[in-house]
Length: 323
Image (cartoon, rainbow, N blue to C red):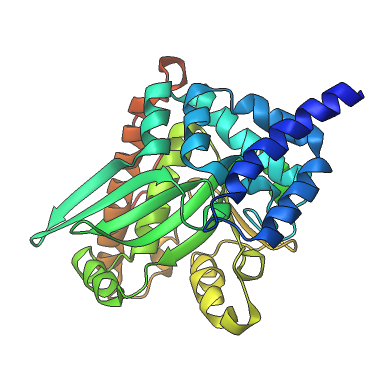
């Protein structure tokens, strides 16, 4: 790379970061310094990001959210332990995949606003699954699946479409879950919604919705970070993180790899009814049917938004064995 090219590329990094630095509430001076240092050390990757952001809808997203273009340069973007090159590769893969799959009108709505995938009205309550760009704690995943009750969000699950090699998978690409969290102060709503919705908890509902997105997009594998690789993990909150991540995915019998990821094919296998305790089989069938309805509704909604050549045949494969 010659001097002129280095100077031009450096300007594309330093100019927007200077604007970002003027927003004092966004990032600390120490964090900005680290971003600049890693950006200058990875100019090739940043040039690719800059080219990607020339797309009108992504350029608009970057203008509305100045840190959007630099998230991949922050430590622990998506998961602890990824290199800057891997983080850039994930960011690029995700948005290239979205551009290749959906029309700009849909991308504008999901990146700049919020879109409802599925709604359920039951017992005088309204529950909804929505999809949007992850904004708060945005280094923890690009897209946010949100579960709400009566208009108030109570749970979320963030994900990014990443190259399979990043999580040591042989699949070309996977959906990487990097954040699973309930909102603060909503324990009562979480408990109430679980009771109303056939004893299916919000995290399980969002996982069903995510499977629907994966099946619609033809993505055959889901991965998730372990507690120790989650971006915000601390030793002081280890038990809380283990409950949200490790115990949740272990409870689904999803294997954990040695490198700190849970990985499973989509659809996720369910235990045969022969392994379900006597007296629980009817309840298990009801729960599975409900999760299947959420998955199917989300798959059909996403498929309907795709560019015509990308739409899959419906109905999509069920994640549950025939009973």
